[in-house]
Length: 318
Image (cartoon, rainbow, N blue to C red; front, side, top):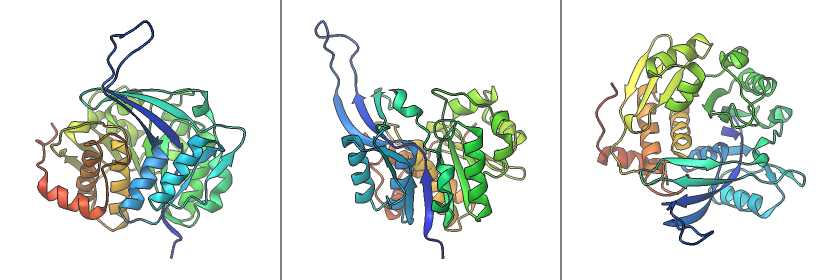
């Protein structure tokens, strides 16, 4: 029996979320906003917390500074049942802090800094994820997964040990890679999950079907294009699935994609068909969007199943 169901690898960040920012100053240097909150974040953190809440034995491999921000993240992970034994603590590299401005419709813009550059070389700790049923690579195309050699090493180590590999993508912030740069790794990634903006950036296409085709042509095995309020589009060499979204009032979309991939991976590990896992994943993303913060709204698998029966679906993707 594997030690872990899921190991999430990637960035751990403290998010300072500013909701309802008013760009009109109230004084020479002062501005107003509806609210300001501190929330743990980073794809790996969000995915690990969601996976643990959904009943998976979950660990996280990330780097945190020996600083108050790092302590907040580690404490929150432990409080939510995530194994923190693989976390690397550093005196030299501070915990990254991101400022996020959330609009009224739930969409957001973020500000990063040089602390987000740090690559802690997860490939050096392959023994840490060699005993997992699945590995989720948070923030593919950003540190630590903005180096083709690092990506190749992690994907190879996971695949060689029989783990399913899920890769969540991000737009680049410091170093830019193309699909061609990681083509030798894509064939070993079981599922890749770009959102529509990321799909457009990496493929140059505007249509989800064409985006998925480009990812497949580059070597990907299963592609999920996340389409926000329009659900998602799944494609592999044999199967196409269009999954509509759940009809909710979005408050903050921060972490919705992370909750989506955690939900999808957990259901695949439970033996669900792709179509059912996608439906469950869309529900996880929708639930996440109903409150401020990536790890606030989602509580358990039972909650998701219950709300799937109660929340109406939007019309199918066109």
